[in-house]
Length: 257
Length: 294
Image 1 (cartoon, rainbow over the protein chains, first blue to last red):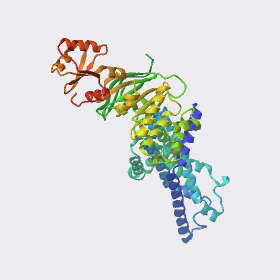
Image 2 (cartoon, rainbow over the protein chains, first blue to last red):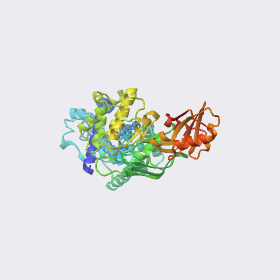
Image 3 (cartoon, rainbow over the protein chains, first blue to last red):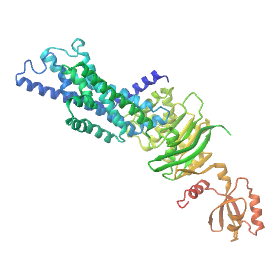
Image 4 (spheres, one colour):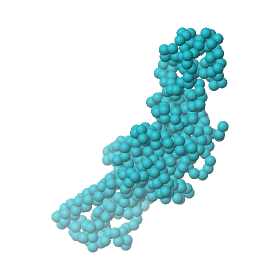
């Protein structure tokens, strides 16, 4: 099979597996409903306190989902990646396919596709969840191409992909699905925030793996800082992601399935 | 002798300080059906995993002399692993999508062969162990591989399933495929394999053809009490296996004739009332070579 056909076959297989899993749809639906409820509560609170034109009526009101629910979106999305990747290793399906002649690189390639797909889906659902509120109060249909600041959306999706690649690495390194999920959640919500507490903002926003990815999307969403700083953060984040992917390939190549 | 399909040289796998297999060296010629036997923990599944590439060797080499074109190796190793939320058909579709040249017809062929076509629409999580075993066998058959590595393929199957798997293995062998089959069922191995490798504590302790096994063990019966000692000093006797009443089971060298043996016994005043080939050859070999005191 040629390289391109192989990648297509892998992508098709990953999409088929993901979309056939009921758990994926349940998590996605819960995530969507949860976001709508949170935004609705925020909207009611803002209206009660007399915020002009409501919370979402501002010209860049659609950016709120990014700022407000960004980290939750990234956490849920990356958690799904960890679950699917680690489960595949513990179910023995990866071993079955590798023992039947598939190169090991297939596994990581497939999960890169999965990580990207999930990042895009959850990012879009995050924006979709806020759409009714923005439209009701400002009349701006944020999903219309002309109203969608593409660059910000793209960096958020890129940050989500970066998160998912780091999650993928965790899933490959930790032997069980539950262990991998616990390790990832601990890192996202405990380890890195704790470490960040001891560092200055300049260091934590650039040099910590998730800190740099968060900075990547929060900076444009909040109006931006210096272009040089943002470019530095992007490079660091890119390096972390590239390193995670390379280590994931090496780990899968060396591990017993 | 046909060329080797698989060559194994100095294959060793360490898990920490524990060696699962040590310095394995053997060839499997093209078209041979070889049994891999050994007690629990002897390294059978590790060996198959090393050959299939799911386990990384600490040292040593596996060479697959498989001609280009088509699939080289099909394997069903360890507990069958499937996507539990997908149906049997969908599971094979995923594998087929990634294995070049496998279309819907091929999936149907292998599912029919393992008698799972009627349950193709059921989720893998609802399959019994036996059905999962058969689905793993079907996955191994996809793409018509030249070499099959099968780990306890009859494990968890009812007698009808055992016969079906045996027939399938014979069918593969009849198609000229090279097969390495691990099993606890000595009778099954005896029925389908032309050669056995016996593993103990990660090392090969016997590598014999079934023909040699069958012809080399004889049961001698005589009322003369000197039978064991006289049989033991016969130059062609390799091993005195067991004594039961008036009978003694001995292992003879490959080129030793029974005539020479009886002549030797007669010359020492031992006259046989019965001389027969040992019927439980493989089991005896297994028990003898895997005794914990050896």
